Length: 70
Image (cartoon, rainbow, N blue to C red; front, side, top):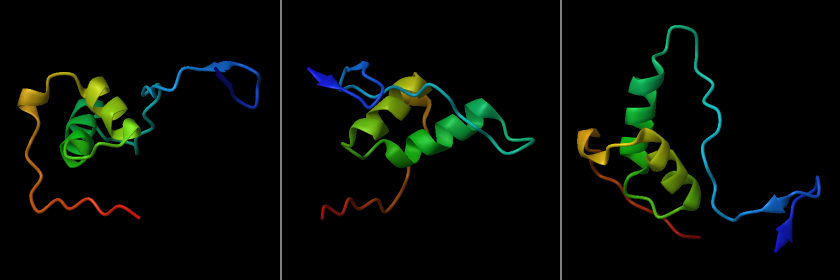
């Protein structure tokens, strides 16, 4: 069990709760494009973005992706 600074229980599985966009930006398009970039990442936040995007079969494909672990 982990508690965050407010004393709430941390589940350990991030979820996307808010998406703040520039004026005129389309939420679905932005989420699809960001998800395409994150699709090759194993990071938990990337997985949260992919979950929020829904159907992964409709994502554009990102090219030349390289994950650099430090």
